[in-house]
Every structure is written in structure tokens, then in C-alpha cells.
Length: 84
Image 1 (cartoon, one colour):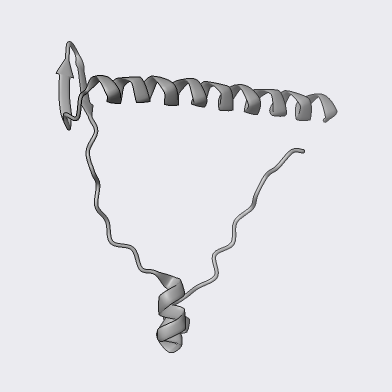
Image 2 (cartoon, one colour):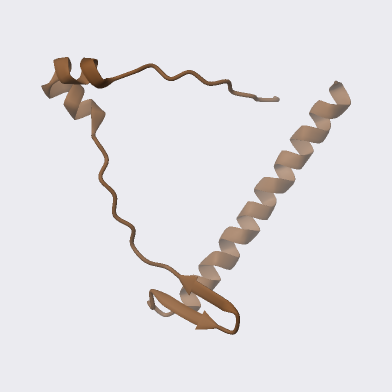
């Protein structure tokens, strides 16, 4: 179990390192797009544009309409896995 925990932490570290590398690559691509929302380069189609969505601000709803908040709120449970 100790060996697996060490392996898990090392893999997680490598994933984080790769994510940082990928984020840097993504930023370089975005910079080279010069503000374009869509580009087609060879077999690659690249899009970088705003996405809009509507979200409910539950803290304001809870403050201003607590009965509505309580009526439509629900507790969601899940398991969290962490190795320190």
C-alpha cells in the first residue's frame, strides 16, 4: 500500500507538470491566433471564443428568498480521495 501511495503521488505530480506544459502550449497557440475566434491550420481547427451561460447565484437567492432556496436546494454527497 505504501508503494502504491508513493506511485500515486508521483503520477499526480507528473500530471500536474504535464498540465502546466499544456497550459503554456495553449497560451502560445492563443497568442499566435492574434484575436481570431477560429482558425484552420492543416488538419487542425482551433477555436477560442467566449461561452455564455446562466448560473443561479445561490448566496443571493438564499439571502433574499430563503424559502425558495430551501425548497429547491438538495444535499449532494460524493467521495473524495486524497493521498498526503
